[in-house]
Image: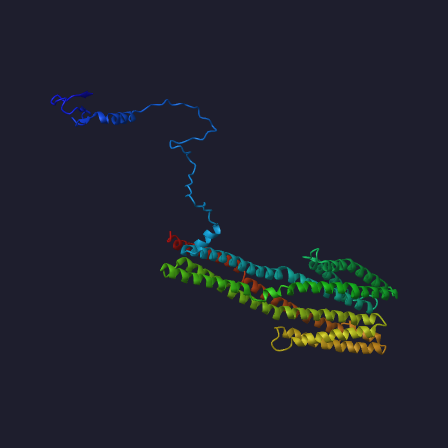
Length: 514
């Protein structure tokens, strides 16, 4: 509303005053002359708002929702690239890792990861080494040695059966009950030992399987020939000697060689793991020492960089690994010592004495067969002397000072061997002069001065020594097994605890840098 000032002259200035309206009362009135009207009108018109009608459009599923600022909600906004600059490619993860390792927390994190992995891997390796040793020792006690012993009994029993059959034949007529019983017992023992020696044989071992097949098929043939020879001998038929020769040839050329090969294979199975059980676990010692050094170096490094003298977690890990090292060191060395003692005082004399017993069985067969078969006396005598000489060397070896505690048995065997050789020489002298009956009496008779009694005494002494050395071997092997029985489980348990303690001790130091 435009009015004039009632108290002023309207023609004094020619200007109009405009009343703007009260602003908490009356405000001042600004005059607006003709020269400012156009500017005022333009400002008034600029304040005028023009309402435009809103056009409502139906929303569709294909159209994205647009916010009030014209942007799509949820869509990240990429900052504009300044003019003249190329966009920066994302950095490589390997480069970022390198940068992280260059920092102190990054180095601590890498050290923690390396220590944890080293503890787990070294623990698994050490546990595997000790467990394999324990398994090898247990296998020797439960499987390998009993099977080897059965193979030795098989060979000896077959030789005893052959010698008993020859002795019964040359005695003429009806054999004594003692010889008959000895033959039957030897065949029964050989059959049982054959079954035990066949256990644990795999199809892949063709040589052992072939020898077992030979023994199982030819042993009944041999017993059949012996029964035929015995029947003809009772009836006084000369053909009995031919059947005995066929049976003895089958035993010497086919059955005993197969039994000897089986014996060698079974005993090789005992000595095969000897390199594993008789050497300390050097690899485990080296790796455990390296792990202790790594943990100690880490403790020193962390103490210098974090200004803390002790890190409980790393100290616990050091103690765990040190216990593992001491356990493996003492247990491993003690086990190796017991295994070495089992070899020197048990396995070696056991094999030598077993060989001596096999040789005397061969000698006995040669001695009795030389009286049953004419024409081969020189060859059989040479074989007997060779076997006796070899047995003498073996017995003298264990009569030396420092030998295993089998001196009494070896001395008894040496005296019996000397008596046997003397009786054999006397019987051979009688046979060469035509006194065949006296030669037979000295060879198969029950007299105190005969070969039969000396041979029986020698065999008993060797069996006693074999049993003693076998017991020594098994006891020492069992001691070696017990000394490291729980080492495998203890190693993996303590090394895992060391890994956990390392992580627990290092993570608080890493978090301090965040």
